[in-house]
Amino acid sequence: MNIAGLVITFYPTKETFENIQTYLPYCNRLYIADNSDPNIIFPEEIYNNPKIKIIGDGENKGIAERLNHVARAAENEGFEWLLTMDQDSFFDQENITKYIDCIQAFNKKDRVAMFGIETEKQPSEINNTFQKTTMLITSGSILNLFLYPAIGGFDENLFIDEVDHEYCFRAIQKGFDIIKFTNIFLHHHLGMQQSFRSLKSMQTTERTFHSPIRLYYMFRNFLYISDKYKKYFPAELKLKKTDLLHRIKNHLLYRKQKLQLLKMLRKAYKDYKKNNMGKITL
Image (cartoon, rainbow, N blue to C red; front, side):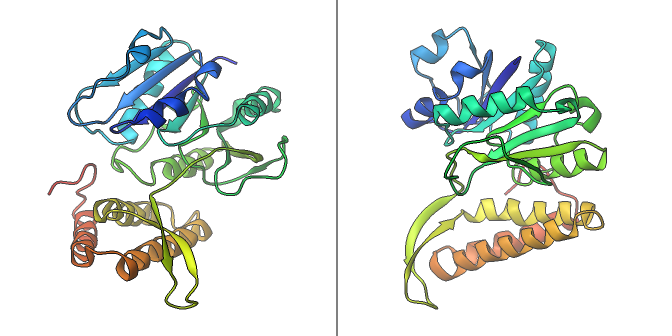
């Protein structure tokens, strides 16, 4: 399988480079697109690996622009597929091996815009069970570079958040499929997790939190895709709205910076209405 890989980094740690080793052997080329601002120095073994190409300019250019840059570069180098990864994600070997095998054996894979896998609950067994879906996250997805130009690339208005889901929606509208292998697993984390006692049940639970700036992007970009796709994907957008409200509620109940969050949400709404998209300006 003629596959390139991409990992988008932001002040990567030792753990990031350990994660890379779990999928590097399965990529003919690995692009590291670094959003650290300013530039960082990578370990010597990264620079010395002929498979790896580092893309970085000392600026945080978000997710969509980096995805587009690397997708075009991989396409120009003759690659057919692009594995996209977050820096905190990693595979167990048997999962990624099965993943590649499943795609190679998949019937009519030329009509699939993106393949993806399970990232929340680890299945009890690994097999080729799959389903059509409407949304996949960037991390662990494998992009069909042949269809990428027809779909139109990733929407750089979004910067981060909803970049992956918007691409999936657009691909489906153009008649292509999004496929998820439900019994193949990727270790992945979104946001910062902390234990808190529930105010309702008084039981201790794990909750995921995000910074006010990240919630700004989540809210603004939800408004953007909601207006764009509400006629076509109402059920998905209803679920996304519920999830977003839950994340905001958790921050207001259990975190500090409450006033800052409310200010950022107000700014997100105003920026969307004024079509101030892309990277936030403060």
